[in-house]
Image (cartoon, rainbow, N blue to C red; front, top):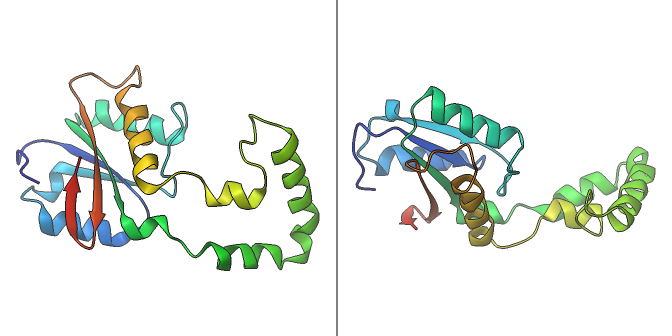
Length: 161
């Protein structure tokens, strides 16, 4: 990742702890010069809590570059096991029916057709990371001199776009 050792980097990563380890091993930077924000979300909201955290870090920590990073395996959680756990809880059955009704009839507040579709999310890993990069890059409160890019990690090989 040929970067300036004094540059302050801000990584937005998933909850895969291995990414932080890979970044430490494959970077010639001092770990004190990069910040890491972990999130379940692959696509952030332009005015949500994560975006606010990114903006605050840019100004408080003098961030020079934001890198949205994800590992290929993060795109494939065991959703069937999660769904099974949710759907087998009897006390959730009425709530699931209510959510499914809202998801079907109350758009755009509920953007998917069912709770299962909402939990699955949409788009590929690359599409979701690209969307997040564009949201951050084009946010009116992110200075134009702060670089924003994506980093896809595939089997410990770094691919920076």
